[in-house]
Amino acid sequence: MEAAQDFSNRTLTMTRTFNAPRDLVWDAWTKPEHISNWWGPKGMKTEIKKHEFKAGGDWEYTMAMPDGNEFRSFGQYQKIVEPELIETTANFIPMTVGVTLIASFSDAGEQTHFEFKVVHETEEYAKQQYEMGFDKGWGSVFEGLNTYLEGLKS
Image 1 (cartoon, rainbow, N blue to C red):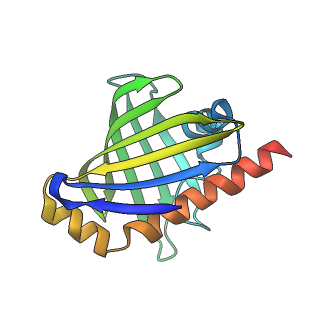
Image 2 (cartoon, one colour):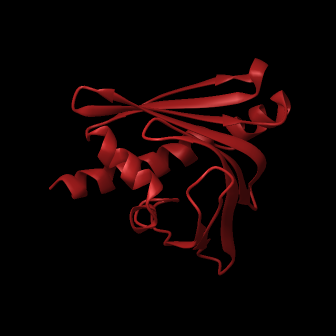
């Protein structure tokens, strides 16, 4: 996994190659019955509250935190190019608000190259999010996806 930050354009980027075909990675990322199995930090159960997978459609996921509070993530899909690109607004309450996520999927032989961008409102906000643990947080989420994909392939 490689992580880089480009503060000049307010974007934090992660790339990853998953050892699974693109159609499987796409399904895992876009279908609620898959998302609930890997989305979020390790050990937290994700509940899909809303999932309208279309441009203009809303999504909302919640997770119970160990302290009893609820971690809520929600947004609206802006652009979907199946099976290549997903662009959505996103809020992760209580940690991150007002970002845009851009997930790109491309074939890499029998694997999938994945690029994930988080666009922030300002360069300062991007830097703050990076320092709060962007790599660790999203890295953990993508490790969960990788583990889930490996289980689907067996």
